[in-house]
Image 1 (cartoon, rainbow, N blue to C red):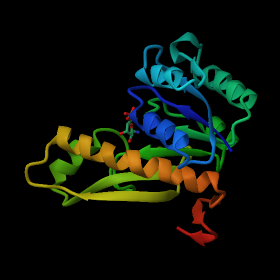
Image 2 (tube, rainbow, N blue to C red):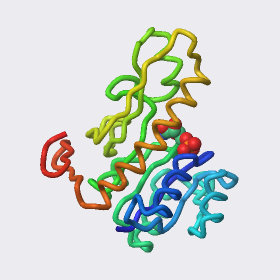
Image 3 (cartoon, helix red, strand yellow):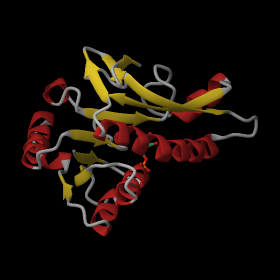
Length: 203
Ligand code: GRF
C-alpha cells in the first residue's frame, strides 16, 4: 500500500511513521511528503529518510481550488492509496475530500467529538476535564467530524499546563498513528457511509 503524508510543521508524527515503516511495523511504503510551508521541518525529515519531499505553497495559487488541483495531480501521479494528514494546517474543500473518500485520515489532539478545531489543550484545561487524548479519524468536508478509527486517552493532572499536555499528547500520537496505519496497510479498516469498520465490525 502506498501512503503519502501532508504536513505543515515539525513533522514529529511523520517521523514516527518513518520509524515504524523502517522497523517493519507498517507494511507499506511512504511514497512522498507534501508541505504547503516551504521551510517545514517535515520536509527535511522526509529527505533524510530518502522520501520524496515536495512543496506546494498555497500562497503561489490564485485560490484554494487551484492549490488543491495541484496536490490532487501530484497524489494521482504518485498513485497513492492513502493520504495521511499529519499537522497539515490547511482546511481541505469538499472537492478534495470527496475525491479521496475513505482514503484520507487525520490525527487530532482531542477526544473527538470534543474540541474540534484549534487550541485543544487550553480548552481542556479551561473546562477542567479529567481526561484528554487524541483521535485518528477519516476526513470529511466538515472540520474534525469524520468517522473515528481509534483514540488514545490520558488523565489530566492538576499540575498540567498547555506545554505538558502537548508533550504528553505527542507521545500518544506517535504510538497511535503508526499503529492505525499498520491496520490500514493490512486492509483491516474500511469506511462505509460515515461509519468506520475494523475487521468488519463497526467502530
Ligand atoms: C499534532 O499534535 C496533531 O495532532 C495535529 O498537529 C500536530 C502535528 O505535530 N493535527 P507534528 O508536526 O507531527 O509534530
